[in-house]
Amino acid sequence: MASTHIMLGVTGSIAVFKACQLVSDWGKRGYETRVAMTVAAQRFVTPLSFASLAHTPVRTAMFPDTTDSQDALDAQRLGISHIDDAKWADVLVIAPATADIIAKIAHGIADDYLTSMTLAYQGPKILCPAMNTRMYDNPVTQRNLATCREFGWTIVEPATGRLACQDTGKGKLADLGDIEAAVETAVGRAVVGERSTTAETGRLADGELAGLHVLVTAGPTQEPLDPVRYLTNHSTGKMGYALAQAAQFMGAEVTLVSGPVALDEPQGVHTIRVQTAQEMFDAVREHFSQADLTVMAAAVGDFRPEHRSEQKIKKTGGAMPPIVLVQNPDILAWAGEHKRADGSQVVCGFAMETQDLLANAQSKLQRKHCDMLVANDLNEPGAGFAHDTNRVVILTPQAADTSDGGASTPRVRVEPLPLMDKRDLAARIVSRLASIRQERLADNEPRLA
Image 1 (tube, rainbow, N blue to C red):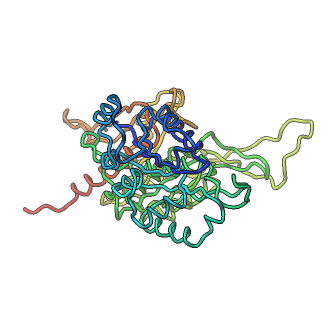
Image 2: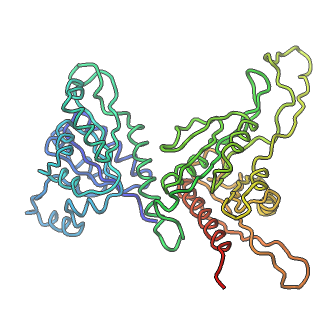
Image 3: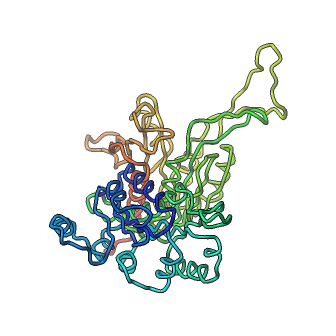
């Protein structure tokens, strides 16, 4: 799969040096970055610094001086032009963005390389303002920012603090983590669209899930023992949140039922926070009938204490009092049993195993009446809890085999997938489920005699 392409515009601010860290961080994630610098930006940091980090020449002028033969060859080899860069980029980021560049963008001015390339670019675009607090608060700047928002720009709001000019207020370049999070969201939107048009993967394109409702569960559940302690597991919710975001990028209306996690709510997703398995079950029952695709990625606790102590359980010097456990509701089994009969509702379960992966997963697929099951082995390197990657096997039921003339034998298709980023896997899973639904509906359509 092709690398993600980020076009970074850098303008004249003391915060320019922080943009070097952005390029470095994106390189570590495997992204390719090209940098365009204004004349003012070059007074703070030299183009050589960015070129060394991005491993490609920096764009500094509409008509670069190519009297140097090597520069001319580089320009010809790379096809460097504002139009080429606009077509190449998956995401455009301007950080830091001065009041000047914001005003030019708001009014369509194209008087240098960066503004000309910006005017030609079509795709996700992010502005990260950085300036004196009085300049930022000026009604003209605020009007220009509002205009940029109307034109589809995402604004990463500046931070508040002591500025280089010794003023204190809002105007510092946002925390790099906030900028990188905004880029990750934009990258997800751009890359899901790019991936989904790849014919050999069979994935769906952006908007293909428009009109569909997707229900996703994510994260762990917590079962209180007393006001201080609880039973839980190591799930971080990363897989479920990636699934919810992928479905939203593809145009679906998404409801995410999330256990306690330390993740930000996915943009554009209706998120319901729960704690216990019973609360998750109640939320799923409330929204299941509207869901066209349901993905149960949560690590739901199988058991809960029969009795919860109203006070903290204290050490008394003797043996700990026994804890009696009772079963929690089986949310996946309930969903499998309550699907619409016409095939328009598809349910996917998850299975994490530590032994006999395929045997246990196949049994779960059949017992829970799933349309698809995603299974992984906790012992596999890079898979399971807390990782950004996963290695899974996808199981889907197939038509029963009756070729021997005897009783039908259930058949299961098993598809191992390589280790991949959970966002990549999420796009595959959601697209596969949508395809299953389309096939079911097509099979159930009445046919003319």
